[in-house]
Length: 299
Image 1 (cartoon, rainbow, N blue to C red):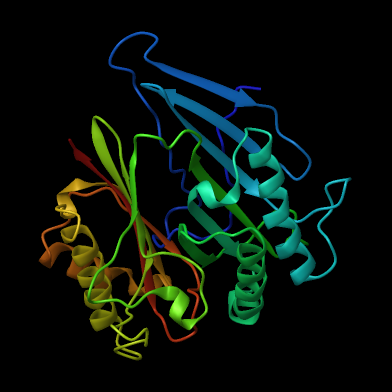
Image 2 (image 1 turned 90 degrees about the vertical axis):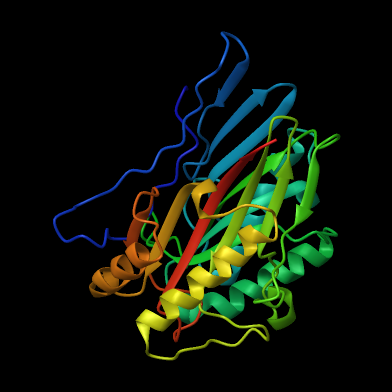
């Protein structure tokens, strides 16, 4: 019953000698008793929940949400699974007195992303409209194999149950348009300002320009550089920089792109930052890479 909020996804590590990779977030209290962690037993479909209370703020993480029936078996079609998983997340939030408009960050996984991403957007857009989600959460939409194999989609979410007093706002940059302009209901990033720090959740960011178009087709090096520029400018607008990043995931469409990425990463002076590299299809077939990050800026 003390398991972490965990997701189990199939995205091969880009380094061929690695069979698997584990990414962990842990909190170490400055003083005994200053952090309270409550775990909840898993439910059908493997959903896990974790409530973390720090300085009066209650952070809720729900992971491994999928569209399943009462026995835990995935529903028969992609749209049924997608519609059900969003509704299932809403129901679990209600158990904590929260609503979906409070959600700050989502991580969305699609097994056949090239085939199903458009239908996923229709499902999410409809759900957000029905439940008045106007402040769009930061989000990543990425290819990942799920368990059981019949599962075609799943997601994780994070929310602050008592946002009163927190400085919460959507992140913007002039180098990117807003994703909802081309039908994807997410923000480029979310700022969560707390008394002791500001946490920046940067959405999955790729080689996209000011009008939402993919740029540098078939050129992985230039796509990596545009991706890094977009992340840098998202940080800069919040008076932050790359050195404030505490967690990074880089998704490469093909593992063979890793040497090119690492060369760019080094030339940008970023080699010492924590980064997980996995092979995963991105939300558009012509995008070759994507990056998400969490940055923390002390108050």
